[in-house]
Amino acid sequence: MAFIRQIISRASADRLELLIEERLKPGIDKDRIDKRIWNLFGEKWAVLYTDLAGFSRNVKEFGIIHFLQTIYESHRLLVPVIQHGNGILLKTEGDSLMVIYRSVDDAIRSAIAMQQRCQRHSATLPKEEQVLLCVGIGYGDLLRIGDHDVYGAEVNAACKLGEDTAKAHEILISAAVAQAINLPDDARLEPFEDAPAAVGPAFRLHYDNVVLSSYLKTK
Image 1 (spheres, one colour):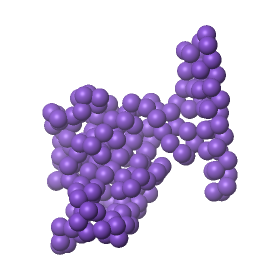
Image 2 (tube, helix red, strand yellow):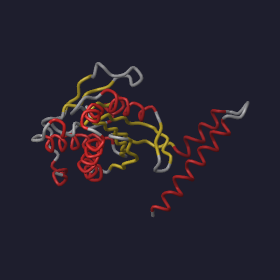
Image 3 (spheres, one colour):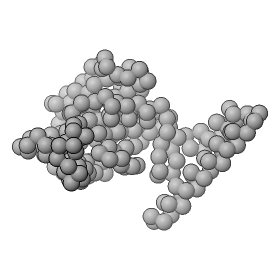
Image 4 (tube, one colour):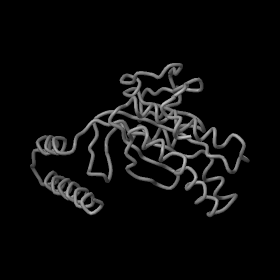
């Protein structure tokens, strides 16, 4: 199965590359090529992007082995939540994860469960051992290239919110997410005033009182 997935991913990437090459030709109808690309690869997904707060500072202070340990521990905590929440882990980059969900509600519930699990894990640990999670979520039409990558404005929004903007314990969401979700009981949104200009309006999700009983098995 892994070999088949590799073939599919390569086939998608190769097909996209050929279309991009065609798009570069002088006088080509770019709108027509763009429609072909979207017809082949366009899908609607929620994108969740995670980052760890204070990570670079801890690497400098405690060294590369501590860096690797923290990444390992974050994966141990988060991957079961992703799997339980119907997410697909597309890729890891250092201390960050990119996850996609067909349902924006699944993405929201997974984000809450991730934060709550990290907080329970870290509650009795010294500061340098804590897993301090930051989360950004976007939702909309994306170009999905096999199981290799996704591209689109909402991918960029999730990345900027999760990696560049959110602080420890925060879940920040784009306006597209806010318009599409059914909030869990006891969750609420507030406008996030410091969103990057490239993202546009964004919201902070308050989740402290949310109980997700279906996620208790991931403790």
